[in-house]
Image 1 (cartoon, rainbow, N blue to C red):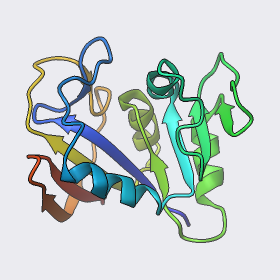
Image 2 (image 1 turned 30 degrees about the vertical axis):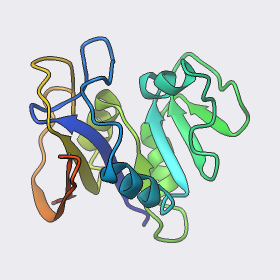
Image 3 (image 1 turned 90 degrees about the horizontal axis):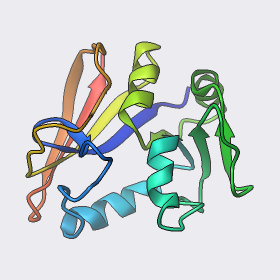
Length: 171
């Protein structure tokens, strides 16, 4: 079964974006970026929420991961490009992707609502946090409220940029 990895940048107080979806609190340059970009090549399938997709789309990026199959959870929109598939039921989509042959992990690119939906179904296998040295006080949470899980820390890596990568396995 293919595992699902939730890779996400987060502030020290647990937010993945400011209240308006902005990302100004996050370190966008530094040694952690090279590590992140290199790690992306290990994924051939990406799943994301529509709000996350819209961040790139607002900057003209319609196919954010051109080497991979990309699925966007959306009940109301259709894809602006044939390389990106919009799906109305992310739970069934992730279950089908996980059951494909092979063991290559699937990258869950966000956001917090989609991650919560998938975690409630027990579909997230690992959580990789890029912990940024900033506090927002309020914003979009890492997971929507009422999500519970036990995690085991597998690895950490500290970068000169101040970002800490923490990899957890969901028990």
